[in-house]
Image 1 (tube, helix red, strand yellow):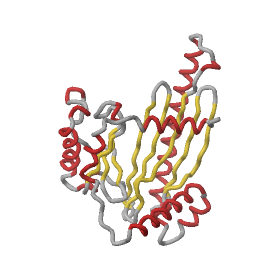
Image 2 (image 1 turned 60 degrees about the vertical axis):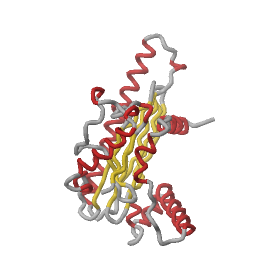
Image 3 (image 1 turned 180 degrees about the vertical axis):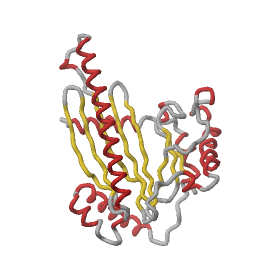
Image 4 (image 1 turned 30 degrees about the horizontal axis):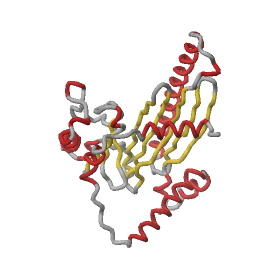
Length: 277
């Protein structure tokens, strides 16, 4: 029998893997599928990738290993986002699964303290609001004659995903995922310049013509297949601004992120548009 956490993860995967229009992923990512040439043999690259996955997995599983790795001068940059706390709550009203990240090893203690407190406060506030909604829905269900034994609890999760961690940049995603009658995902991105301790913006990473670069990529995808996107009179895409969600991938590309229904129908899912600096 599946645990509550396994059920939540299954729903989350189903939500994120909703079928996209077959040509849309190609339209969005086709210009960026060219592989960079490497001097290393393919077998060596595969081995290095496997070792990296094992190392990163060990960081998340073992706090002791992560703390030790953070002290290594060469490997310290990999160990900068760790699980600060993890907990689960199960009641008649909600099933909660939370993993709280902590930024460390950046050489900017004040930045780490401020960012970690901001993340924890955001999770606490959002979780409190979600649990309040869950309680209200449960009470309304029972008040209208619903059988408590038949009630399906609201599922709420908080998790994070490191997008890139190099000597210069740390980029990671904080996700709030909520399931009741339908699924909802909120994504928040943190992009940090590890040389200055400053939060990176689109102008920082794309230059003075950042808006033109970003808009051109999105408009190109829309022009190629307009049927897959909302039109202007449906509040479709009208250009990016400085509050645009984005992260930086391992290749240094800026990836613009649009949530479901933001610029396209829900069937398109969460859309990502890589923009090369």
